[in-house]
Length: 507
Image (cartoon, rainbow, N blue to C red; front, side, top):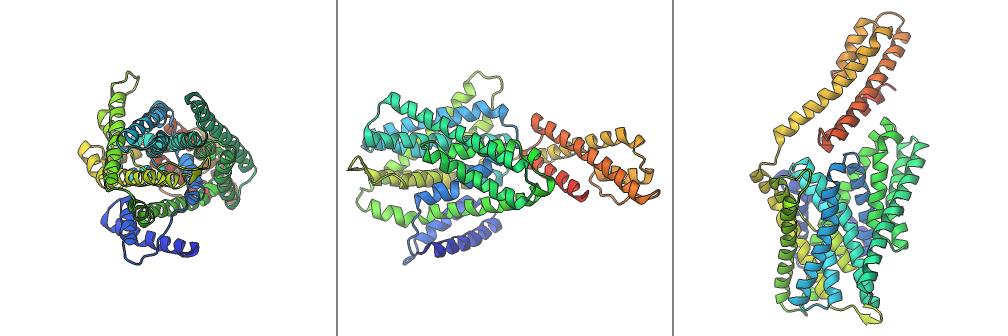
């Protein structure tokens, strides 16, 4: 199929299957993957081949950058220890465990087994966040899972690069570890430089269209620059997104933020949905051509690798529960985290990007590794995404009323801060009492009209000054809410949007 036809078909599939998922109340990820599988099995259906570079360069940078940018608006510091242990220690342990099973049971060469482990270890940021937010999982669990998946993608791909390099030239364990650290640290450093440059440019602009272009440039530029220098492009895009996200409220006006938000929301939805659909559509391109020459026992090997991946993650959660720490995650949240280690298009794209030839020899057991990675993706993505909501309810973690109370408390705190600032400044403002009454009502989100009495223009100017001061107090209260982690990231984003809308009305 031609690329244009593929894109049109993918968009049509996303619209149709997305509507089915919406009506049925099912996670988009599972419906799109299973729908893609069913479409792929239709006789005569053209084979859609997933180009690894299309995912690694065309899809991944903007998705990772946007996820990191949003995550930066929520204070991740209390969860840094959990995120780092999951994204480094758990990934490396999973690499070793899967490689050992691949070597001992499936008979893969050590180099191929390590490649399999590196691709099966990292969770997918797209799969994790889309499914967990759909089912209304606790904000802390979602925050940790998103942070883990953002960082461990870079960790897993760095391990993958080292394993492929080992296949090409044979490097020692010490050299491999040094290369791994260099790939990871170098990617983060490049991303921070790009993020800093983006912030400096955006400080000098106030045009939403240009800032969107700069955001896309930062996402793709950080990834490509790191990749060209042999570092982790994923970690570069993550670092750039986090740095820019932390400065977002200081470098953009309310008008610009309100204009940019719909673009990034629509872009991430379309790219995520197309990736899920592509995973399902890969069945004819992967399985028949490769399993035709492989014994059926390889399906059993794939199921075993899935079991190892899940078991290692579960064991790690038990270890986290027992570890002496200042603040432990509750057992129910650890259970949910352990069950949410979904793999996705990144693992599959990495598998398809395994070189055909290294050091003038065919890459050992390349087809077997690709089939096993595909089974791991299906096993860890489809089943959990369909059953996570039931698990959340069984664990009592839905938190519907708790989230509503949390939002009410947050909005009350914001309104109180605005009213207190108004009380401080009102006596000397020269604004008539009737206008002050309406301004107080507006601080409670009840709306306002123009002032009455006196010189209309002077009153309007005075009311505008007061309103700006109230908005500044509300933004200070919002920053305190973020620092105190007193509300979910979605609630904080909605409150910021409301404040931005109030500020735009002043213009």
